[in-house]
Length: 361
Length: 75
Image 1 (cartoon, rainbow over the protein chains, first blue to last red):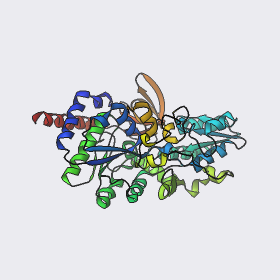
Image 2 (image 1 turned 45 degrees about the vertical axis):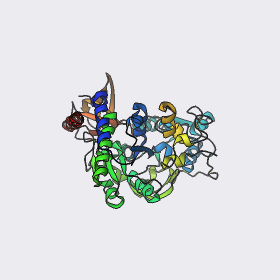
Image 3 (image 1 turned 60 degrees about the vertical axis):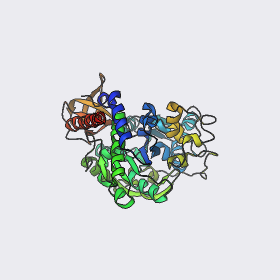
Image 4 (image 1 turned 90 degrees about the horizontal axis):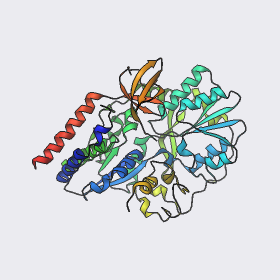
C-alpha cells in the first residue's frame, strides 16, 4: 500500500457519492476549512458530484492567504536591511503587501531565497556566518513544530545568525472566531487533516458542544473527503453533532505528542492578525522569552509605512466563506495567477487560484 | 501549505532518515517522529516526518468505504 492511489478509486467514489445522496434529506452547509481540501475538491470535481442538498464553502485554511499585509510589510522591511538574507517558502514571494511583494524586493536587490524547509534555512545560516538569516515563519500547527525544531537545533549547534519572523497561526481559535461572527450558519466542518496530525481531534470538541456544529477530520484524497462528507451528513441527519476522525491512518485523537512538546517549549500562545478577520486573541504563536534571541522582531529594528489594502480585493470575505471568487469583480479579469491582486490568487491552495485553475464556471 | 506526502523510510541515522517516493530519495528530519523505523511510511511536510502512517487504520478505512459502497448497492 502506498496510501495514495487506494484513496482515488473512481468506482468506489461513485458509490460513496450515491450513498451520500441517499442519506442527505435536508439542506446542509459544510465548510472545508483547509485550502488543501479546496484544491482536492476542485481538482476532482467533487462539488458538482454532491447532491444539491450539500453545500461546500471554502474556509480560511491557507496560511499564505491569511497573512495580513502588515506582516508581509514586515518581511519586506527585514529583507531590505543590510547583511540580511530572508528565507521563505516559495508561496510567499508573489503575495502583495501594502507597497510591494518579496519578489519585487528581490528585484530591488534584497537577498531573498526560497527554501523548502527550515532545514534549508539553517544551512544557509551555517554557510553565511557573517550575515543574518531570517526565516519567514508562516504556517499553521502543521508547520509550527518544524520551526520550533529549527530554533532548538540552532541553539544546540550554536548557530548565532538564525532568526525567525514568527507568524504561526492556530486553527481551532479561528474556527471559534468564524462561528462567533455567525455569518455562515454552518452545519459541519471538514477539519484540516495535517493540522490534526499534530494537534489531534480533541481541540475541536468545543465546536459540537458549544455551537452544535459537526466536525470530521479529513484526509486529502477524493475518497477521504467523500468519506468525511458522508460522516458529516450522517451526524447532521441524526441531529447528534460530534467530533470524528475519517483520516485515521494519519490522525490520532491525542495528536503528535513529540511535536506538541517541541512547540510548547519554543512558543507561547499570542494574538494574531488574520486577513479578512482582524486581530484574534490567542490565535497565534510567539517565541518564548527564553528563545527571544532568535526572534527577528526583537533582534531587528524596522520602520513601517501605514498599511494599505488593495482596492476591490475581496480576499477577506472569501477567507471568511461569505463570498466566493466568482463574486469578485477582479477575478480572472484584473487578478490572475500571473498578476495577483490578493493572496488567495497567489497561493496554490488559495480559493481564487483553485477556482482559476480548476473552475468550470 | 500544510501539504504532506507519504514517503517510505529507507534508512535512519540519528535524527535523520533517508526516504523514498517514486524512486526519488532524500534526507529528512525525524526529530518529530522518533518512533519511525525502517520500512515505515511517514507523512513528509517541509522536510520533516510529522507522523508514522498507520497501515492497519488505512485498511480499516478502505473496508468502511467498501461497506458503504455495498450498502448503496442494496438499495
